[in-house]
Length: 130
Length: 147
Image 1: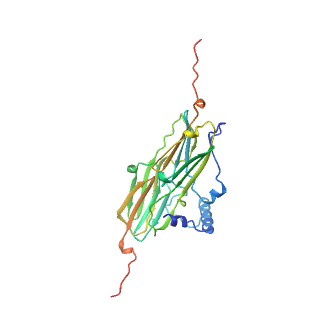
Image 2: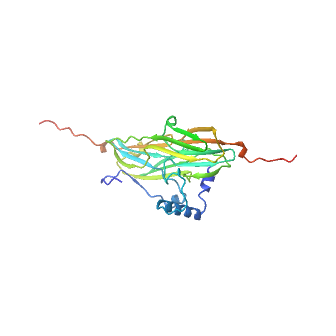
Image 3: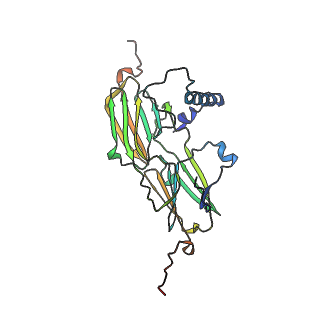
Protein backbone atom coordinates (compact mmCIF):
# COMPACT_ATOMS: atom_id res chain seq x y z
CA UNK A 1 0.00 0.00 0.00
CA UNK A 2 1.04 3.50 -0.78
CA UNK A 3 2.42 5.31 2.23
CA UNK A 4 1.87 8.83 1.03
CA UNK A 5 -0.02 10.99 3.45
CA UNK A 6 -3.23 11.59 1.55
CA UNK A 7 -5.35 8.51 1.17
CA UNK A 8 -8.29 8.92 -1.08
CA UNK A 9 -9.81 5.47 -0.91
CA UNK A 10 -9.27 3.07 1.98
CA UNK A 11 -10.66 -0.38 2.37
CA UNK A 12 -13.13 -1.07 5.17
CA UNK A 13 -13.14 -4.40 6.98
CA UNK A 14 -16.29 -6.44 6.44
CA UNK A 15 -18.63 -6.71 9.40
CA UNK A 16 -18.92 -10.06 11.15
CA UNK A 17 -22.28 -10.73 9.54
CA UNK A 18 -20.92 -10.13 6.07
CA UNK A 19 -17.86 -12.26 6.68
CA UNK A 20 -20.08 -15.20 7.69
CA UNK A 21 -21.58 -15.30 4.20
CA UNK A 22 -18.11 -16.03 2.79
CA UNK A 23 -18.31 -13.63 -0.09
CA UNK A 24 -15.45 -13.52 -2.57
CA UNK A 25 -13.22 -10.47 -2.36
CA UNK A 26 -12.79 -9.28 -5.94
CA UNK A 27 -9.25 -8.18 -6.87
CA UNK A 28 -9.08 -4.44 -7.58
CA UNK A 29 -6.89 -1.85 -9.25
CA UNK A 30 -7.18 1.69 -7.91
CA UNK A 31 -5.55 4.73 -9.42
CA UNK A 32 -5.80 8.48 -9.09
CA UNK A 33 -5.21 11.18 -11.66
CA UNK A 34 -5.93 14.91 -11.85
CA UNK A 35 -9.67 14.41 -12.47
CA UNK A 36 -10.48 11.84 -9.84
CA UNK A 37 -10.08 8.29 -8.68
CA UNK A 38 -10.87 5.10 -10.61
CA UNK A 39 -11.45 1.59 -9.30
CA UNK A 40 -11.53 -1.50 -11.47
CA UNK A 41 -12.68 -4.83 -10.05
CA UNK A 42 -12.70 -8.33 -11.53
CA UNK A 43 -16.19 -9.75 -11.01
CA UNK A 44 -16.56 -12.53 -13.59
CA UNK A 45 -19.99 -14.11 -13.88
CA UNK A 46 -21.85 -11.01 -12.73
CA UNK A 47 -24.35 -9.46 -15.13
CA UNK A 48 -25.55 -5.86 -14.93
CA UNK A 49 -28.81 -6.71 -13.20
CA UNK A 50 -26.97 -8.64 -10.48
CA UNK A 51 -24.46 -5.91 -9.72
CA UNK A 52 -24.90 -3.55 -6.80
CA UNK A 53 -22.78 -0.42 -6.41
CA UNK A 54 -23.71 1.85 -3.53
CA UNK A 55 -22.33 4.95 -1.85
CA UNK A 56 -23.60 5.47 1.66
CA UNK A 57 -22.17 8.52 3.43
CA UNK A 58 -18.48 7.96 2.68
CA UNK A 59 -18.52 4.21 2.07
CA UNK A 60 -18.40 2.66 -1.38
CA UNK A 61 -19.84 -0.84 -1.47
CA UNK A 62 -19.50 -3.12 -4.48
CA UNK A 63 -21.44 -6.38 -4.57
CA UNK A 64 -22.43 -8.88 -7.22
CA UNK A 65 -24.06 -12.24 -7.64
CA UNK A 66 -22.46 -14.88 -9.89
CA UNK A 67 -24.79 -16.55 -12.34
CA UNK A 68 -23.56 -19.55 -14.30
CA UNK A 69 -25.54 -21.91 -16.54
CA UNK A 70 -24.98 -25.21 -14.87
CA UNK A 71 -27.06 -28.39 -15.29
CA UNK A 72 -29.08 -29.07 -12.17
CA UNK A 73 -27.58 -32.53 -11.73
CA UNK A 74 -23.97 -31.44 -12.18
CA UNK A 75 -21.42 -32.78 -9.78
CA UNK A 76 -18.43 -30.58 -8.95
CA UNK A 77 -15.13 -32.13 -9.99
CA UNK A 78 -13.00 -29.12 -9.13
CA UNK A 79 -13.70 -25.61 -7.89
CA UNK A 80 -11.43 -22.62 -7.36
CA UNK A 81 -14.49 -20.38 -6.95
CA UNK A 82 -16.48 -21.55 -3.96
CA UNK A 83 -19.00 -18.79 -3.50
CA UNK A 84 -21.56 -17.08 -5.70
CA UNK A 85 -21.23 -13.64 -4.19
CA UNK A 86 -18.63 -10.87 -4.42
CA UNK A 87 -18.42 -8.12 -1.84
CA UNK A 88 -15.91 -5.43 -0.97
CA UNK A 89 -16.13 -1.94 0.50
CA UNK A 90 -13.97 1.16 0.72
CA UNK A 91 -14.13 4.49 2.52
CA UNK A 92 -13.87 7.61 0.45
CA UNK A 93 -12.29 10.87 1.48
CA UNK A 94 -14.45 13.96 1.26
CA UNK A 95 -12.74 15.70 -1.66
CA UNK A 96 -14.51 13.20 -3.92
CA UNK A 97 -17.83 14.06 -5.51
CA UNK A 98 -19.73 10.93 -4.54
CA UNK A 99 -22.94 12.17 -6.18
CA UNK A 100 -21.17 12.17 -9.54
CA UNK A 101 -19.98 8.58 -9.33
CA UNK A 102 -20.01 6.68 -12.61
CA UNK A 103 -20.02 2.89 -12.88
CA UNK A 104 -19.87 0.55 -15.86
CA UNK A 105 -19.57 -3.20 -16.28
CA UNK A 106 -17.92 -4.87 -19.26
CA UNK A 107 -17.17 -8.59 -19.62
CA UNK A 108 -17.06 -9.02 -15.86
CA UNK A 109 -14.88 -5.97 -15.15
CA UNK A 110 -16.49 -3.25 -13.04
CA UNK A 111 -15.13 0.27 -13.48
CA UNK A 112 -16.08 2.96 -10.97
CA UNK A 113 -14.97 6.54 -11.47
CA UNK A 114 -15.41 9.22 -8.82
CA UNK A 115 -14.44 12.78 -9.80
CA UNK A 116 -12.76 15.21 -7.42
CA UNK A 117 -14.39 18.51 -6.51
CA UNK A 118 -13.18 21.07 -9.06
CA UNK A 119 -11.49 23.17 -6.38
CA UNK A 120 -9.52 20.12 -5.23
CA UNK A 121 -7.99 19.37 -8.61
CA UNK A 122 -4.36 20.29 -9.02
CA UNK A 123 -3.89 23.60 -10.77
CA UNK A 124 -0.89 24.74 -12.61
CA UNK A 125 0.16 28.19 -11.39
CA UNK A 126 1.34 30.47 -14.12
CA UNK A 127 4.25 32.69 -13.21
CA UNK A 128 4.01 36.05 -14.85
CA UNK A 129 7.15 37.65 -16.04
CA UNK A 130 7.88 40.77 -13.93
CA UNK B 1 -27.73 -23.64 -9.88
CA UNK B 2 -24.35 -23.32 -8.23
CA UNK B 3 -25.27 -25.34 -5.18
CA UNK B 4 -23.04 -28.27 -5.92
CA UNK B 5 -20.05 -25.98 -5.98
CA UNK B 6 -20.88 -24.31 -2.73
CA UNK B 7 -21.76 -27.76 -1.42
CA UNK B 8 -18.21 -28.77 -2.18
CA UNK B 9 -17.22 -26.46 0.61
CA UNK B 10 -18.51 -29.21 2.85
CA UNK B 11 -18.53 -29.11 6.60
CA UNK B 12 -16.09 -27.41 8.88
CA UNK B 13 -13.78 -30.44 8.99
CA UNK B 14 -13.55 -30.57 5.20
CA UNK B 15 -12.63 -26.93 5.19
CA UNK B 16 -10.00 -27.43 7.88
CA UNK B 17 -8.57 -30.40 5.98
CA UNK B 18 -8.42 -28.34 2.83
CA UNK B 19 -6.72 -25.49 4.65
CA UNK B 20 -4.26 -27.93 6.21
CA UNK B 21 -3.49 -29.42 2.80
CA UNK B 22 -2.94 -26.04 1.21
CA UNK B 23 -0.56 -25.09 4.01
CA UNK B 24 1.24 -28.41 3.74
CA UNK B 25 1.52 -28.10 -0.02
CA UNK B 26 3.04 -24.66 0.26
CA UNK B 27 5.66 -25.99 2.68
CA UNK B 28 6.26 -29.21 0.77
CA UNK B 29 4.77 -31.45 3.46
CA UNK B 30 1.99 -33.04 1.46
CA UNK B 31 3.05 -36.66 1.02
CA UNK B 32 0.97 -37.38 -2.04
CA UNK B 33 2.52 -36.72 -5.44
CA UNK B 34 0.98 -33.70 -7.13
CA UNK B 35 -0.29 -33.96 -10.65
CA UNK B 36 2.33 -32.52 -13.00
CA UNK B 37 -0.06 -30.14 -14.70
CA UNK B 38 -1.90 -29.17 -11.54
CA UNK B 39 -1.63 -25.44 -11.01
CA UNK B 40 -0.19 -23.93 -7.91
CA UNK B 41 -2.68 -22.56 -5.48
CA UNK B 42 -4.06 -19.18 -6.46
CA UNK B 43 -3.42 -19.48 -10.21
CA UNK B 44 -5.19 -17.11 -12.53
CA UNK B 45 -7.77 -17.44 -13.97
CA UNK B 46 -9.74 -19.54 -11.47
CA UNK B 47 -11.47 -22.62 -12.87
CA UNK B 48 -14.55 -24.62 -11.87
CA UNK B 49 -15.41 -27.97 -13.41
CA UNK B 50 -18.78 -29.66 -13.24
CA UNK B 51 -19.83 -33.01 -14.70
CA UNK B 52 -23.02 -34.80 -15.63
CA UNK B 53 -23.24 -38.24 -17.30
CA UNK B 54 -23.63 -36.45 -20.67
CA UNK B 55 -20.96 -33.78 -20.52
CA UNK B 56 -18.24 -31.95 -18.65
CA UNK B 57 -18.51 -28.18 -18.16
CA UNK B 58 -15.38 -26.12 -17.59
CA UNK B 59 -15.72 -22.50 -16.44
CA UNK B 60 -12.78 -20.13 -16.62
CA UNK B 61 -13.34 -16.93 -14.64
CA UNK B 62 -11.34 -14.59 -16.87
CA UNK B 63 -12.95 -11.14 -17.15
CA UNK B 64 -11.98 -8.38 -19.56
CA UNK B 65 -10.69 -10.60 -22.37
CA UNK B 66 -11.22 -10.63 -26.10
CA UNK B 67 -12.55 -14.19 -26.60
CA UNK B 68 -11.18 -14.24 -30.15
CA UNK B 69 -7.64 -14.03 -28.80
CA UNK B 70 -8.03 -17.07 -26.58
CA UNK B 71 -6.16 -20.22 -27.52
CA UNK B 72 -8.30 -23.22 -26.55
CA UNK B 73 -6.95 -26.68 -27.35
CA UNK B 74 -8.06 -30.17 -26.60
CA UNK B 75 -5.90 -33.23 -27.08
CA UNK B 76 -7.63 -36.44 -26.07
CA UNK B 77 -8.81 -35.51 -22.58
CA UNK B 78 -6.36 -32.70 -21.91
CA UNK B 79 -7.87 -29.24 -22.29
CA UNK B 80 -5.55 -26.23 -22.34
CA UNK B 81 -6.62 -22.60 -22.36
CA UNK B 82 -4.06 -19.87 -22.97
CA UNK B 83 -4.30 -16.15 -23.52
CA UNK B 84 -3.28 -12.83 -22.17
CA UNK B 85 -4.72 -9.81 -20.47
CA UNK B 86 -2.58 -6.72 -20.56
CA UNK B 87 -3.51 -3.92 -18.23
CA UNK B 88 -1.94 -0.62 -19.28
CA UNK B 89 -0.84 1.31 -16.20
CA UNK B 90 0.05 4.85 -17.22
CA UNK B 91 2.83 6.61 -15.34
CA UNK B 92 0.96 9.86 -14.81
CA UNK B 93 -1.58 7.99 -12.72
CA UNK B 94 -0.95 7.29 -9.08
CA UNK B 95 -1.60 3.60 -8.44
CA UNK B 96 -2.78 2.57 -4.99
CA UNK B 97 -3.60 -1.04 -5.74
CA UNK B 98 -2.67 -3.39 -8.57
CA UNK B 99 -4.25 -6.70 -7.58
CA UNK B 100 -5.66 -7.65 -10.97
CA UNK B 101 -3.70 -10.11 -13.08
CA UNK B 102 -1.84 -8.58 -16.00
CA UNK B 103 0.04 -10.63 -18.57
CA UNK B 104 -0.08 -14.07 -20.09
CA UNK B 105 -1.75 -17.10 -18.62
CA UNK B 106 -2.14 -20.79 -19.37
CA UNK B 107 -4.20 -23.39 -17.59
CA UNK B 108 -4.50 -27.09 -18.33
CA UNK B 109 -7.31 -29.34 -17.20
CA UNK B 110 -7.41 -33.14 -17.30
CA UNK B 111 -10.95 -34.15 -18.19
CA UNK B 112 -12.50 -37.55 -17.49
CA UNK B 113 -11.21 -40.28 -19.85
CA UNK B 114 -14.49 -40.48 -21.76
CA UNK B 115 -14.46 -36.83 -22.90
CA UNK B 116 -15.05 -36.55 -26.64
CA UNK B 117 -12.54 -34.06 -28.16
CA UNK B 118 -14.67 -33.81 -31.32
CA UNK B 119 -17.70 -32.39 -29.57
CA UNK B 120 -16.64 -29.23 -27.78
CA UNK B 121 -18.47 -25.91 -27.51
CA UNK B 122 -17.09 -22.67 -26.09
CA UNK B 123 -18.84 -19.42 -25.23
CA UNK B 124 -17.85 -16.25 -23.36
CA UNK B 125 -20.32 -14.24 -21.27
CA UNK B 126 -19.91 -11.73 -18.43
CA UNK B 127 -16.20 -12.51 -18.29
CA UNK B 128 -16.64 -16.28 -17.92
CA UNK B 129 -15.44 -18.71 -20.58
CA UNK B 130 -17.61 -21.80 -20.66
CA UNK B 131 -16.20 -24.86 -22.43
CA UNK B 132 -18.61 -27.74 -22.72
CA UNK B 133 -17.24 -31.17 -23.69
CA UNK B 134 -19.61 -34.04 -24.49
CA UNK B 135 -18.81 -37.50 -23.15
CA UNK B 136 -18.83 -40.71 -25.17
CA UNK B 137 -22.23 -42.32 -25.03
CA UNK B 138 -20.90 -45.78 -24.23
CA UNK B 139 -19.88 -44.60 -20.79
CA UNK B 140 -23.28 -43.20 -19.90
CA UNK B 141 -25.41 -45.31 -17.62
CA UNK B 142 -27.93 -47.31 -19.61
CA UNK B 143 -30.93 -49.25 -18.47
CA UNK B 144 -31.01 -52.77 -19.85
CA UNK B 145 -34.39 -54.31 -20.32
CA UNK B 146 -34.82 -58.04 -20.10
CA UNK B 147 -36.80 -59.38 -23.00
